[in-house]
Length: 289
Ligand code: C5P
Image 1 (cartoon, rainbow, N blue to C red):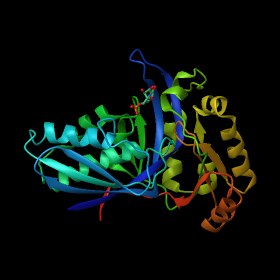
Image 2 (cartoon, protein in one colour):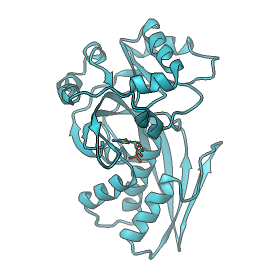
Image 3 (cartoon, protein in one colour):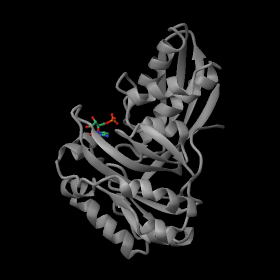
Image 4 (tube, rainbow, N blue to C red):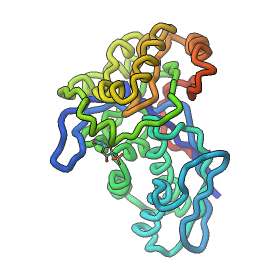
């Protein structure tokens, strides 16, 4: 039995450059891992892929689940269907939230199975399998902080910021990523903001980082869910140095000067049906426990 933890992410910058002929959008985005984790355990079995979820979850455990897809792909491509695996997921990262939870679980499955079966599998092959599973999966193979280009799957690792305090507020109802992209409301920019963020992250100053946050999907998410814009405004009122939609939403994150301020602000959102998480940025990715 092998157990791993795998983090969620926020995107301090997400720039949409254009819509590509294949229907995806060309992006330049900054990924930053945060200290909110799903846990996955892997056990060998003779054949097939079995997924169990611990705790309450309405997540499907059939072939539509990204963990099952990743495990089937790995067993077929790397192990020639010679064996099977039983996977147990302890889900903590909110779903359909813009926090990359599904992609993180898929990356953890690829890395977990590589460890479990002790296979000689190149990073190139892992990356190719990851990008076939989803645009955000490649980032989670690396973790920490990184620039994403292409549709988000081309990853350049960056030095991560220090432990920046982050407060996450997620409205109860999720938001569909394709719906956000297809709304036609994204603002298009050149990609310079994302590329210029490298120095800011390395310096790790919460105030400078907070004053350069940008997400071109905000107009789309605010249009589809006006409540999200109000959450952003409230985070600033409650003392965040900066606040931004995470990925395609609907989670909004606020960056705070210290953990005490983040915790104090979190209390102002209680009792309204939000999922609320106080955490911090981390320099790591999938890790064995
Ligand atoms: O790659 P992934 O399966 O995570 O993407 C989900 C959906 O998000 C895509 O089907 C597409 O509608 C949208 N998307 C996009 N451009 C990207 C990434 C995602 O349009 N770069």
